[in-house]
Amino acid sequence: VFSYCIVLCEIIARVDADPDVLKRTNDFGLDRVAFRDLCKDLDCPRLFMDLVFQCSDINPPNRPPFSQIGPYLNKLLYKAPPTPPSRPNSLLFPTE
Image (cartoon, rainbow, N blue to C red; front, side):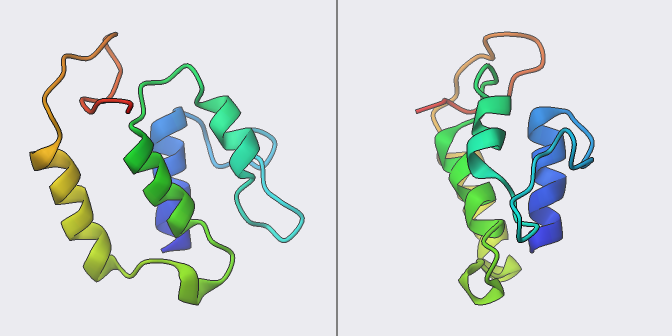
C-alpha cells in the first residue's frame, strides 16, 4: 500500500519519486508537509489527499487494505458532485 501511495503522489504532483523532489522523512516516510506544499496549486480533492496520507503511514497496520481502497475510490468517483476542471490538467473532483 505504501508503494501505491508513492505512485499516487507521482500522479498527483506530476513528479518522479526521486527523494530530491518527492521529499521523505528521516524514517523514509512521505514528508506530508512538503508534499502538501508541492501540490498547493493543484486541484486535488482533500478526500483523495487524505487517502494518500493514510496510505503513506509508516506503520503498515495503520494503512488501509486494498480491499477498502478500491471501494473508497469508487465512492469518490461516483458520489462526488461533478465539477468542471479549472484548468486542462486538473482532477475532476472538487477540492473541498
